[in-house]
Length: 216
Ligand code: GDP
Image (tube, rainbow, N blue to C red; front, side):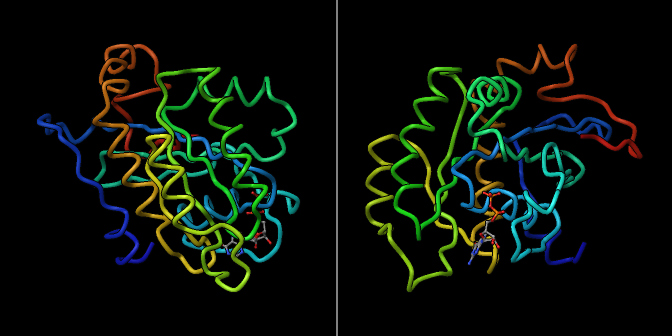
């Protein structure tokens, strides 16, 4: 990983415990209509790479794919809900296994933006306490834009969620979107409430790991 990426990936958390062996593990699910760029969003964040082909159909194993260690304190796992949009029950089940959800739409495809409301409804039906955030991907395709940024900002304000336009291709706002969200999750009541639970269950929160351990 380049020095620049390491620096970009740094996140600062309120933690008075200086035990080097204790880290946070944050699992985030990426949802959104097929083709909005979920796999590439994960590919950019975790590998700092982009693929012009469809990663899902190319067999990219994106579920529970990647680990990010930030100042040795936070591991961010981004899960791809690829191929599961049609299986609502499975997707809903995933909602209960992560600490946050990023809803992605494609700024060149209005329908994917209109469907954001349906994604929010599905999340709220499942787990009202979970945090979610919104990102409008492919913002590099200015000439093909079908969703005004102002419209998305208005929508996000009405729904009280954070919003950023991103580009997995041009590496715009990907790290900001994820890292700001991770920071919000860590500082949230939802997360703090579950830290004691985490001591027994590694699916959330803080735990002690072997430095060489792979996690996914
Ligand atoms: P998924 O089905 O939501 O996982 O979408 P993919 O990550 O497979 O991307 C679908 C298509 O959109 C692929 O051809 C990608 O190369 C393209 N794509 C993804 N993100 C971007 C982006 O930020 N900008 C542009 N121009 N194309 C993108």
